[in-house]
Structures are given as C-alpha cells and as structure tokens.
Length: 282
Image (cartoon, rainbow, N blue to C red; front, side, top):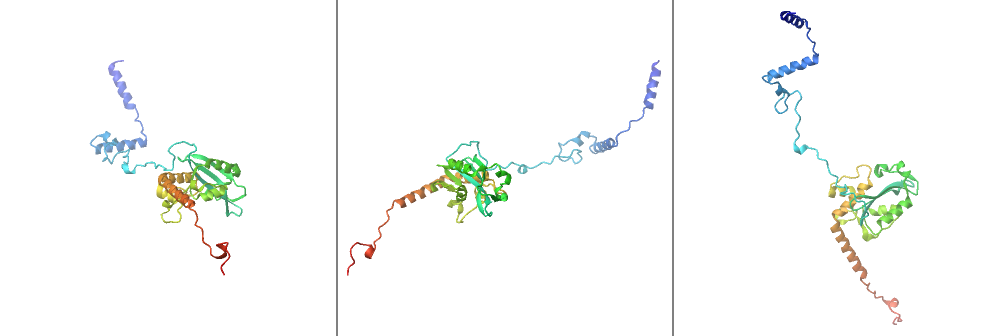
C-alpha cells in the first residue's frame, strides 16, 4: 500500500469518528471555567487560587479567617488536682451527700468522700443507711437506687472515715451536718469549716459553698446534682488559698482560750449565814 493510500485511509477514519458525548455536569463546568478564564484575561489558574483574598469568583471559596481573640481556648478547671498523689496528708477535706429516711424529712448518709490537700480522692463510697430510704433526693444528691444496692454498710464506712480523719485537720463546708450523719466527732481545734470562717462571710451570717467557690476561686459547682468530689475539692482549695491567715487566726483564738482558762475565778463574798460560820449578831 502506498503512502498516499495510507494517508487517505487515516483521513477517512478520522472523518467517520463520532464525537464523544460529554456528561451534562462536565459540560456545565467547562462553560463556567471558560467564562472565568475570559473574565480573568485568560488566566485560568487565577480562578482557582485562594492566595488572593479579593477573588470573588473562586470556585472553592475562601476560608473565613478568625481573629486571634476569637480562637477557642480550653478553659482550665481550677479544681483539677495538680498531681496524682493520693497519699494521706495532714489536711483532709470531707463532703457527704444525704438521702431521706423515716418520713423523708430525716437525713441519713448516702455517700461520703474524702480528698487530700491536693484534691485527690482518698475515699469515695456510697453508703447503705441503717433505716429504709424513702427519698433518694437525686436532684441534689445524685444518688439513685442502683447506687445503694452494692453500697458499703454504714458501720464499715463510719469506721474507715474515723480512721482517715483521726489526728488530721478536717476541712469542709458545714461539717457539723456531715459529722452528725456519720455519728462522729472531731476536735474543734482541728476543724476548718468554710461556712464559719469569718473573713469569707463579710458580715453575712452564712454563704453557700457554691457562692464562695464562684466568688473566690472562679469555679462553677453544684449545677444540678451535687458532686461530693468537687465539693470537697472546693472546700480544700478555699482553705489552702487562705491557709496562712486561717492558721494564724486559729492560733490566736486558741491562745486567748487558754489564757481565759488559766484565770482563777474570783471568790464571791456572800452576806449573812451563807458567808460565814459565825452566828449572826443580835
């Protein structure tokens, strides 16, 4: 076959080839690209570029920039312990949650929590009251029936708590309620109660732990169901923040109490028969 015949055959093959049908979406995209290229003086690459903030015809669009002030920074919880040391320290904070027994108006221990001076948990147990529970007070206590099915016996929890707080500085809020529920006592000079510390009260008879924690520590607790771990940590942190002044205050009060105790009471001078053994003058 001659070269002229070969060229003629190739030309005939090209002429008979049917045009390929394009997908309608692809055709639409090609038309859009052409219109963009004409609008940008033939520079097709520019239409895809995100480098220019003034390019409104970009197909991919422009990432919205956020100023540094709006960047989300995770908020640090001031109640989070700074370490994982769970050893027993000289200061121990306690918080208890109560349930209702008898007619529901009488409180009984439902959960007890102890943390050390760093806020790490020493003891946290649900406690089964001696009397039958008629009100779990879940909206405050966070305690549910299932929590008490395998709870510690009251005597077991009481013995363990007494062992942990013996000889320690006991920190908490309204501790008389917690000790009453545990049927325990603690030396008054070793109690640091945030509900009774005068510098916290500022003339008011009493402030809640939630209020003190928000005002002094900038932390938010007791939103709905109470968490005794958070409450015990909050009380401990309030104490630690003012520990130096608090201990000085306790020492001054103890010194004054001892001074008053050493003073001998003055003898009262009695008149008449009771004041002397002599017979009354006639």
